[in-house]
Structures are given as C-alpha cells and as structure tokens.
Image (cartoon, rainbow over all chains, first blue to last red; front, side, top):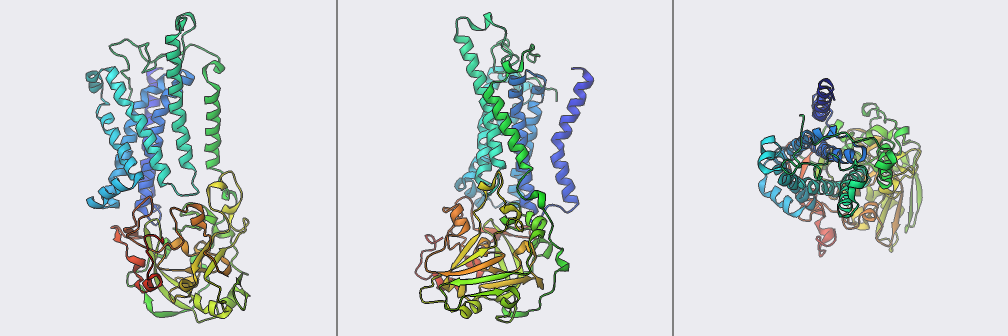
Length: 235
Length: 319
C-alpha cells in the first residue's frame, strides 16, 4: 500500500468513526433528539459502541477469510473508538440520566442483569485501552498482551447480552448483533482449530502450501517468539 | 513482518462453506432491517393543529397540578405497535388510519348489547376534560389533558349481567390501516393482533377510567389512538387500549396482549407501583418528558383513591 493510499484510508476510517458523534451533534442542533433526548442519546451512544466493537472484532476474521492483512492495522483505533463511545454512554447514564444518584445506580448495577453485564463489559475494556500503546505492548510482551486482549471476546458477548436484555419486544437488531458476534468469534475458533490440527498432524503444514488463514495471524505461530502477537497500528 | 499479503487461492479454498452461508444470513438480516413491514406504505397522520376541536367542560377535580406536557412531545413519542416499534413510528405512519366512520361494538355479558357509531358513543354523557399523568412501564411520564366520558356511563347503558366480571378492549385489526400488522419476515417478533387489554369490572367502573376521544382540546390524533381509547391513569400506559372497535364483558380474566407476549414481565393488573420492579429494570423513578431530573414514582401514579379496589390483595403478587 502506498503512503498516499494509507493516508487516504486513515482519513476515511477516522471520519467514519467520528460520524456517529457528528450526526448526534447535528440532531441536537436541529432539535431532533425526540421527546426524550436523554434516552435517545444513551441509546445512540450504546448502539455505536456495539457497532464499533463489532467492527474492531471483524478485522481478524476478514483476514482469516480473505487474506487481507492491512485492515488489522485499524483494530486498535476501532477498539479505542468503541471504548470512547462506551465511556460516553456510561457517562450519560451517570451524569445525565441518574444525575449522580449513586445509591440508585449501585442498586441498578447489582440488581438489573442488563446493567450488570453492561458495566462489566465496559470495565473489561479499561485494561485494554490502558495497554493499547506501543510502549505497553513492549512492556507486556506480545504473548501476554495477546492473552490480556482476549478479554475483548468477553466484552463482546456481554455487550450482546446487555443489548438483548434491554431490547423491546418487536425489535430484531439485537439478534443481528448476536449473529455477528457468533460469526466473528466462530471464525477465530475454526481457524485456531485448524492450526492445532495442522500442528499435531505429522505431515503438517510443511508438505502443503502455507495456510493463508494463519499468515500474519497475531495469535499464530509464524511470528518470531520475541515479538509474537505485537500488533501494528497505523493510527 | 506480521502483516503479509496472502498468496492467491481460489475463494472456495479460503472460505469455509459454513462461514460463507452465515455471511449470507447476515446480509439477509441487514437487508431485512431496512425492509420492515409497513415502511413502504408509511403515511404521516394529519398535523395536529388541523384536527377538529372538541369542546369539553374542565373536570373540577381531575386536574393534575404539574405543568402539561408539550403537545409536540405527546404526539410524537408514542408506543403504538400497530404502526411500528419505535416511538416516532406512529407519528410517521398513522396516516393510514381512518378514524371516521367508526363503530364500537359493546357485547358479551350485557343485557343491552349495542353497536355505537363513534359520534353517538360520545354523546352518552357530557364530554369532560381531565388532566392526568400517564406513566409508561418504560419509566417515563407525561401530563396530558384528555377529553372523554366516564367509561362507567357506557357500561351502565349496556347493563352488565351478574356474571360479568371483566371488561375486554379490542383494538382494530386491519393491516391496510395499521401497516405494522402486515405479515412480514419479522412479524413473529411483535405482538399478536388484535391488541387486547382488559380491566376488572370494578376498575372499569371507577370514576377515573375515561373513555377518551380527544386531547389538548381536539379530537385524538391517529397516533394517540383515534378515534376512541381508554385512559386508566393509575395503571401503566399499555393498559390503555387505543383505537377500540370492540368492548366485551366477560366472566374470566382476559388474556391481554403484553401478558401473552411476556407473562413474567407484564401482569394483568399492571398498577403503577414503585416498589415492584419490572423484571429488567426499576420502577422507583420516572423521567417526566420535558424534564431533566428523574422523579420518584408514586404508588398508583398518585391516584391513591383506587387503593380500596385492591384491599386484601398482595400487590407484589398481583402485578
């Protein structure tokens, strides 16, 4: 990819990630946040947290299935944008929706399962966001970093549960998100299973052509031990 | 180098079939999201300021002391699944409803069953304007000036027999007028039609229960349940059936729409009760539409005079 293309793609991804907030801002300015703006904003931010999270999780399956490695470079950016929207979503719940009614919020977190899993999903993203810098990757080492960042799979499942449990009867969006999470995690599991089979088989991958599913795979065995798994980003 | 371009392979070698198929399902789902039933025939209802005025005498005591909710909010933020699941859907799609001419059948365990023309129905007693609080089970509320007649006046007219214990309300079923009733790919996910609601006879006869034909000084907008609905202010909003075509007096507790859809979440009584949480969320507070801070929800939505209807009943059990 040329430098120019890379910059163009980067600009496009940043623009895409900022569009939901820009649209929300536009709707606020044009008085288009429905009769219940607090609910509308909370829903909007929550929905985009989910979509950005799914987008970040879709890049590895895209590579496994198509061999395109370059989108992986945006995984960190999408993950951080998901975290950013999730934080805003939670922040609106605390400040605007409940206006610091800590006792009530605490009760909700403990007693209402959809809130429990929602808060847990976000809390699990905190260490991931904190360790997203190149320095932290180096300090942790690729292997540890990878292990830690598998927490995002838990976040994804909890986020879907959160969505399913609060969705109104008659809605179907939540099933779509559940399906996407099943696919993006399923592809990973399938790829990992293939790798294990390939490793344990005596004729192994040496006799056949290289498996495109494992090329450039962060969790794969092809990378050198020292830097294994260290992700690259062009954000 | 971690990021590499894969060598060329035939796509069939790269994509496992199962994954390929699930991608198809995903695409179908994504496409279907934009093809929900009804969207094609969506027609916005007439602007509320062009609806005919409806004269009514202000009720001397049923006047909520909080400020009335903006009419723009009351006519654009509605739960009326016959026109779509989203709150804004009814105000976008309810133009297909034809509220005139309209008949309401009153039948069942009554001595004088009768089919009323809507205009005749509204003459059974003088129209009154009552300002009530409407508390939605979702945790928001509005203050709305309704216009109607006490339901008890209608019940008296048809003379319930001694066996009549409950009253059922049936909303119109007509997919041409109510586009979200059309059978579609996802109709399984919504409610069963018709929308049926019900009350115990003594609840239906309570003076607060209003057979409602107007709001904010005009006839009901389509999205708010034209031409006639009930309003039961001490119960969650979904109990107040809209666009009613049939009222039936029966001996057994009615099977109501939301109770059928989610029996553990929506009971038959559904009285506003801050101490009984919805299985998924708290009912202790509510957001008054147009306000910033949450308010404490009051028992029976502040209509404590109905408490005697439930004396001896454990309202944590009879939800």
